[in-house]
Each structure stands twice: as structure tokens, then as C-alpha cells.
Image (tube, rainbow, N blue to C red):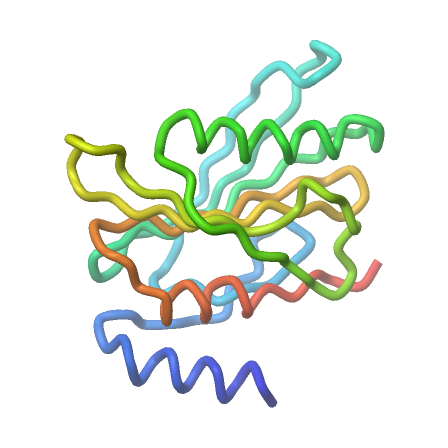
Length: 167
């Protein structure tokens, strides 16, 4: 019920966004996207050097780009380090801002999980990025919203809509 109210509130406040429930195949979760996401997958070396498949669902709506990326590392001992690398990498690209906890039913509780705001460094074009990183078992996730200006209402709808599938 709270999700429906939040979704209705978010939709009313952001008329350029057409929120819809999405269940990306193989992601093990559902969430709301403000547009119809395109799927992409690519192979890259994993922490042990073995190839792994990285999946992404993303779309552009209003002034922003929204994406969910996930990969199954296959090794629980690598999950925390992978989440930290995602956070660190964004901090190398943009100026880190405030952080916040992230609590999703069913997620693996790890210190590196959470959400953070990033912005362009001085002298660079205006950019705001919101990121959430979390895990469930050996699967790691990165949720991103990138735009030229902050849209806290859209971020709140996007991140609060995540529902991990029962295991």
C-alpha cells in the first residue's frame, strides 16, 4: 500500500515520468522505471579472472537516465569488495556527497551497501548522480539515476520501489 501511495505521489510530482513496474529477467527483483528500459548484457572478467555476465536495464526519461546493473559473482567472499569498488569508482569520477543507509527486505546486510549522491567537480558540466549498491547472496546490484539537476522525488520512487524476489 505504501508503495502505491509513494508511486502515485511520485507520478503526480514528475509528470514527464511514466512509472511502470519492471521485472528484469534474471535480476531476481522488481522495481519501478519511469520509462521502458532497454536490456544489455556484456561479458567481462570477474574477480577470479573467470568471465561473468553483467546485465543492465536502462532508459532515459525527463532530464535523467535510470539504470539497474547486476551480476552474479558466484563467490560470496567477493561481494563486499565488489560493492566497495562500485562506490569507490563513482567517487573517482564525480565529487562524493551525502550517504544514506539502504534497507531492502531480503538484501544481504553488508557495510558497503548503501546509497550516495555525487555531483560534478568544479569546472565540469552540471551533473547529479544518485547511486545505490546492494547485494543478495552472490548477486550484486547498482541502481543509478543521472541528471543535470537533482530530482529527489524521482530517486525516492526509483529506489523505494525495489522488491527482491523471494528465495
